[in-house]
Image: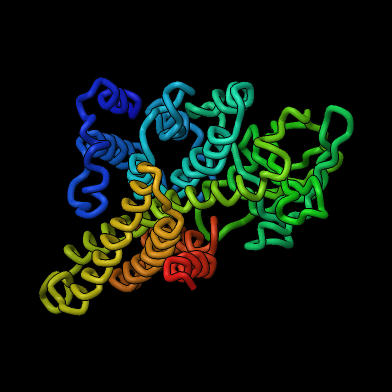
Amino acid sequence: MTTLTQIARLEKVGQFRWWSRIVNRMLSSLVDLPETHEMMRKTCRDFAENELAPIAAQLDQEHKFPREQVKKMGELGLMCVDVPESDGGTGLDYLAYAIAMEEISRGCASTGCVMSVNNSLYLGPLMKFGNAQQKETFGHPFLHGDKVGCFALSEPGNGSDAGAASTTAKLDGDHYVLNGTKAWITNGYEAEATVVFATTDKSKKHKGISAFLVPKPIEGLEVGKKEEKMGIRATSTVTLTFEDCRIPKENMLGEPGFGFKIAMQTLDAGRIGIAAQGLGIAQAALDCAVDYASKREAFGTPISKLQLIQAKIADMALQIESARLLTWKAAMLKDSGNNYIKLAAMAKLAASEAATYCSHQAIQILGGMGYVNNMPAERHYRDARITEIYEGTSEIQRLVIAGNVLKEYGV
């Protein structure tokens, strides 16, 4: 199987260098993907169909972390898609990451979630704000599926108010001492390092938050029990409790007080990945619905011939294609260095709501068979719901979109 690194190198030797010259034109047309990205899409689709889809139900039912599959994804270059080759990564762009995320999530949304956290929430801020030593220590071991990282921003009392961090980090000689609790940390049980956000200067409010790289396990850090979740059950979600946890001051990521900025920029980019995860779930739901409707007969004909069923299929396909184009455009805006914050929020909102809608309609088309776990429809429904919550709720996305639109109007 062709790895993503091999595909990336085709660009480096010039076979597809025309990509950078047509980005702006593609932002308008969005008709065809470059050949490198189509190759990568096929690689990911083949992997998802052969390695993930057949075991997705088992992983879900057993709440089993897909360790073996994550390792194979690492060998393909899927755990560090947009990390530069100079830093040991795959060296592709964010459009490639979005496409890969959709295909992996189409096979197994839980595995897509693990991939998303490691790529965008852990390696993303590390590669953007970390120094050479931090990248060597906290980056390189996490590139190829041997280890995964996590992102510790949310707390029991702050949710969408990321600037209200009650976790503190106090300088004591050549160490910072961390105290506080982080909640809803995906990958938190298996992760061997985390990006943690803590207040270093309360008087500065959100400008007094700093980011730190914390290895796991470490004295003073307790990992809570795995939460029993509605969906993406093959991932772990835990609390991380810091009690006088001492870390070297060299573990600060970026400058003092940069934490809120790092968190917001990380989430802006991460929303493209969650949009792609939502697309994968939505597409899997449509696949399931069409397959069932073409085989199930009622009134002497396959139900796919019935107009009400066709209307549902049409609406599902419309939402998926619309959200996909938004997601690709957001990714390409990021790749071309343009402001992508509004489009990322639009993509995340559209794709997550498409995932919820399509998985709901799939159950309606399957009827009773959609309500039992013999079929994947009910799993898609459970997996879809979280995409409207994490990395910014749908309500927050609407605020981000409206704020940017009003700014464009000078309001």
